[in-house]
Every structure is written in structure tokens, then in C-alpha cells.
Image (tube, rainbow, N blue to C red):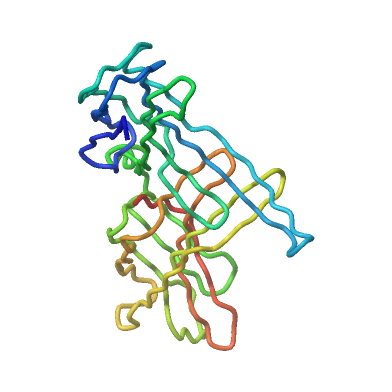
Length: 274
């Protein structure tokens, strides 16, 4: 090929607010006419929901632009044969959503370098950039959480030191059982549920995509006395986020399995960031 383009990057994963620094490298074997050299950074939130099947199916789609930037690195003019390096830098927006790929929603960032060639196919290089929430900012608005089950019978009361957690962390909680009376408690368990909500062209879909359950050892439990328990968060969970057409969220359940009766559940939303 008479011309090639590539981008040198130290990595492809960044936190919100972080600066991406890279270099566009162009190699030409002969002089090339050009209307300019650009670096484009585009982030989109897309949703897609299909109703029906076969010939009667219809797919609904919606899309929101998170960020769309173009950085000019070179103006119009011929590019002689040789190797050229063009450094660039820009900041991931603080308000950006984390990268996400789900059943009905997708948040994606693409970095593209483009040499605009008149009357011919442009020379293009692109890659996906993976964005994660800035970790210090996640704790900024964390607050203690207290929640309990309702009703007049057995009660489970739960205390958390915060409402925001990271993947691979332990959720520390204090659990107190009250008013158990003659109820036979077969087990106490915690359940972490992750779900995606998406809207596409007026259609809505909610999908549970993650569920893990951990049993509390019964020898730890004393009615009326708080006991501590830790709930592990796996490494591969998706980040909580809230976009224009979709969001991903978590609910923490603490439940009592009652013999010959309905489970007693205390629940609260929490934020988990990968």
C-alpha cells in the first residue's frame, strides 16, 4: 500500500476524567494528497429490543451520543513520502458512562485516526476504548444504609456502612433478627441481583443478568443480637450506570427462609462499580 496509518497507545482502558495520550504514525511510499489528518473519539449508548419472531418480528432502536470529538492534527496539503508522527492528547469526560455490553443495551467508545484522501478511499485506523468510572469519585457520595423487612411477624434488620462498592470487595453488613416467635427459620441468606433496563423507540425491557446467593451460617445467629457477615462481590460484574435509554443496577436482599411460610425479605439498592 502507498500509505499506512496506525495509532500508538499505552493501553486501551481508562477511567473517566483520565487523559489519553497517543501518537498517530503515518508511513507513505510516495507523495499523497490530503485534506487533513484527524483523530475522532466517539462514545454512544445504544439500545435494541426485538418484538415478535420470524416475518412478524420488528426491532426497535434508540441511540444517545455520550461524546463526539474531532481533533485536527494536520491541515490540507500533500504529504511527501516518509514516516510521520503526530502526538495527541484529550481527556475522557467526567460525565462519561462506563463501557457496557448487555442483552438490550450497549455503551461503546471508538477511537479513530483518519487521513482524508480526496477522490479516493480514506486511510483509517480504529480501536475500541474501554472506560471505567474514576474510582475515587465513586466513594464521594457514599452513605450508610439501614433497611428492614416489613410486616408484623419475624423481622430482619440490616445495616451497611456504605451504599457504594467495587468489584472484588466484600460487602460488610450487620444483621439483626427480631420477633421470630415460634417461626421455624430454616436458613438466612443474602442475595445480590443485577439487572439491565432498556428503552428503545418506546419499547421497554427489563432483564435480570446477574444473581448470586450466599447462606449465612446458622451458628452465627442470635435473635435480637446483631451479627456481622461479609458478602463477596465477584470480579466480573458489570458497573452500575444510568444513561439516557438504559441503566444497570443492583439490589441486595437479606432473607429468612421460613418453614411452611413465605420468605421474609429486606432489600435495598446499592451501587457496584467494576
